[in-house]
Every structure is written in C-alpha cells, then in structure tokens.
Image (cartoon, rainbow, N blue to C red; front, side):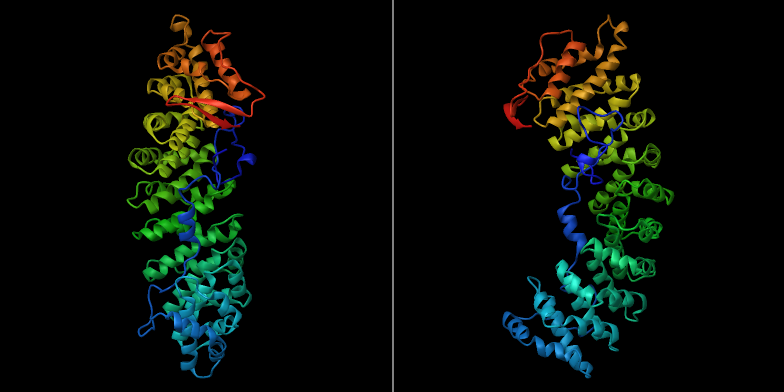
Length: 526
C-alpha cells in the first residue's frame, strides 16, 4: 500500500485488504513513494563536499591545480606526506595545502590515492597537535572532504580517530574557522551511515553541538551546527532517543529564528525524530510545544521550510487521537487548507491530502473540525480536478471520513459534493483507489438507509449516485478481481434493487480490463 515511511506496507497496521479496515484507517507512507523529501533532499542533507568553505583565513591559497599539476602532485604524494611530519611549520603548511587542494577537486577527487599514500594519520595529527591554527584549518578542510566520500573512505577516517579529533576541536578550538570546519566534517560523518551517526552520538557529539546554537554564535557556524544536528537525528533505525532528546527543546527554539536555512534544518531534524511508531517520542515533542510552532511554518514563504514542517505535522497526526487533537487545536486545519488551495506542486498537495486523510481517520469531533474548517471543500475539489496522485490521496481522506462520520456529517459531505468524484474514481486503473472509493460510497449508502422513511422509502444518497451517473459506472465495472466484484454486486443489489444485473469477473484471468471514463479499456495486472 502507498503510505507511510514509518512501516513497510505489508507490516503496517494501516494496510488495506478488502476495503478500509474500520479499526485501521490511518495510513503510512512507503519510503520510496514520496518525491517530496527524497532524492534532492537526500543529496542536499546527507553530505556536503567543500570546494571552498564559507570563510577562510586571509592569504589562503584558493587557486586550483591544472590537470598537469594534479598528475605531478599525485606522483609526488609520498614526499608531500613526509612533509606533514616536518619540524618546519612552513613545510607542514605547504604539504597540507597541497593535500587540501587535491581533495577539493570538484569532480572525482583522488580520495583513494590520498588514503593509500598514508596521509590520513599525519593529517589527523596536524589537526590535533599543530600549534599553527592555519595548519589545523587546512588539515580540517582536507579531512572534511575525505568524510564527504564513500562509506569505506569515511570508515578509514574513523579508524584513524578522525571523529575524535573533530569533536575535540568543536569543544575547545580557539579558532572559529577550525571549529566551523570541524562541525562540517562531523555532519558529513553523521550523514554517512547509522553506525557512524551512533558512534558520534556515543562520544557526546550532540551535547557539544547544542552549545553552539545560541544567538551569539557566528551565523555561518550556527547554520552548520543545525545541519549537523539534523544529520545526527536522521536515518533508520532511529538513533537512541536518549541521545537526541536534549535537542528537541533547542530545535523548537530555533524555529523562531529569522534564518530560513536554520529553520528548515531544525524542521527536518524534528521530522526525523517524530518519524516512527514510538508514541512516547511524539508525546515528548508535543510537551515541548513544537506543534504550534511548526503549524505557523506551514505557510512560510519558503518551500524549503514548508516541506519539513508538513512532514512534522504528518508524523504527529499518524499517532493517537489525542496527538491529532493537539495538531487541530494548534490550527493545522486552516493552514493545511491554505497549502492545498494555493500550492501548485503535485508532491506538496499529495502530502497535504495524505496528512488530512489521517486526521479524517479520527473521531467524529475531529471529522467535524475538518468539515467546519471547509477543508472538505478543498479535498473534494482536489478529488475532482487535480492530478491523479493527488486525487487518490484526497479520496482516502474523504473515504476515511465516511467510515466514522455521524449521519449529519455524512449528509454534509454529500451536500458539499463528495459523491460524484467518488463515482468517477471507481473507473480508474488503480485497484486500491477503486476499493477505497467503493468503500466510501457504501458507507454513505448505509447512512442513506436511515433516511428512507423520510424520502418515500428511497435511499436519497442512492438517488444522488444515480443522478450523477454513478450507477451506470458501477454497472460497467466488468472483469475486476473477486473482492471488488463482490463489493460492486453487493452495492447494486442492496441499494439499487437490481438482483441480477451486476458486473462479472473471471476468477481465472491473469489480467483485468478496466474501463476508464475518458479512455476506453486498459489492462491492469493484479
């Protein structure tokens, strides 16, 4: 099932089998399904190579090697590495600059060649022990780019105690440039793998970084610190909560800053922490007052902030009803409606609808809040007019609402026009969307039975379905798999009075013909 990053679909308690499980309406997102946070964000967040740092000492050599110079320096690596251990600080400086320039080559830096030359241990020694801050800075810069390489390259750096050197410089470095460079390197190491991340956390990296988040910290350093903190919070399996728990109140405070990059990275960190089935983590986040602060960011002018803010709210409302209620009381519904009405990006609209589908899976008061906030109107519009991926998420939201809504609430959903788009979606080729749409229609029809005595013994909602052509569409549903066939046949038989006229299915068929209202038949392999 297309849902959560929290669990694989087959193991998820939110998995659709034959319609919507009344006990399990909330849905979870598969890791690979949502473009909203994936490849570009992954590349941006995980590691950052440094061709040039944000601030460098005066007289720093920023020239780049020519192709001929690169060839010469690679051939001369043994001599350069030997100079790293020279008693002359000028010779050490010359050697470390050469290595830094090699490792800063934009495409295909020779990290393996530098490692093979034995340069890593003496570079770490320069960072740890050299009395010259410029030498330390150059060594940190070179090693940062080693940490931006492959997992094996990062492992070699850690085997030579590079992580300890960087963490030590964050805590005690007299040079801000060395400190900032070390923060960058720790962020790269944390982004390499869960084992590297947890190793850094076990050495107290989070505690040291949190000291560098105050307003008096140099802006560029503060940005790198928050990015590194977010890397320490990300990944699956999640890091031990005790290590990242102290970051939550700090991250909440960072949401109030004016720096968009800091706000975005703080939001991403909170989204990583809130992602998972541990309700205690969500409860702790809510107790820190994170929800109202994040809701205010849903309509931030920067999409880079909106996206992780939406992810945090989405994670909160997949939890228990009381957690969803806090999100509602924090004002998420008007903010989500504004996002849905004004955003043109398919991925964002889809994620908003997914989030709303988990709210409409709540209790009747929560469904009532969705109706009263007029979010239902926006969902129905998206279900009618938007791209298919958005339409199907909106259909989940409406169908979830029909499952738990009261009769008056069902009447309001019908009055606002939910039936025609549900009828249209029973003809699409996505079997799950067909099933969900049918379930929504059945829930509505069940409530219509209670109104027959006031409508000449006719189900008023069945009349609406007939008037919009829905019955004709149901009658055209030929060749569907057995569970869908049985659902359609039951609807026609129970609510429209036709015992013999119903779709048919071929239980031995390997592929099923789907009629689409706008395009003839298409084949769907089930």
